[in-house]
Image (cartoon, rainbow, N blue to C red):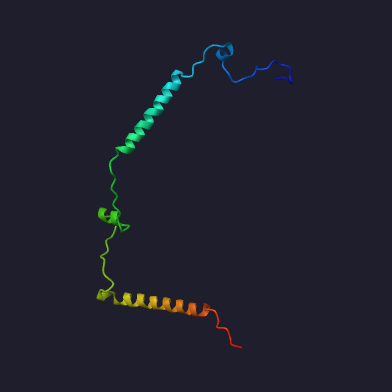
Length: 119
């Protein structure tokens, strides 16, 4: 304000009561109500967390178990792979596994470093 020529303190963040020298009220009714609501909410939240009922969780292994129990999905019988009617499937799986193992061994042999020559 000095550059413009106006007195100091003309623009400030204050109330008229504070400028006049009167007592200011720090604890106003609205502030007290908000503080009380905040305390009540914190108390209610802490009570709800400490006195909550235990939750049990059932994990279903099958994705369609709820649909099956409600009658909305087809049910398939589970059979062991050693069942005689699944011999062809077992043979196909064995061939796939053997082929995969053969490919891994072949890759390991080709990626192995060459033996140094004696020379």
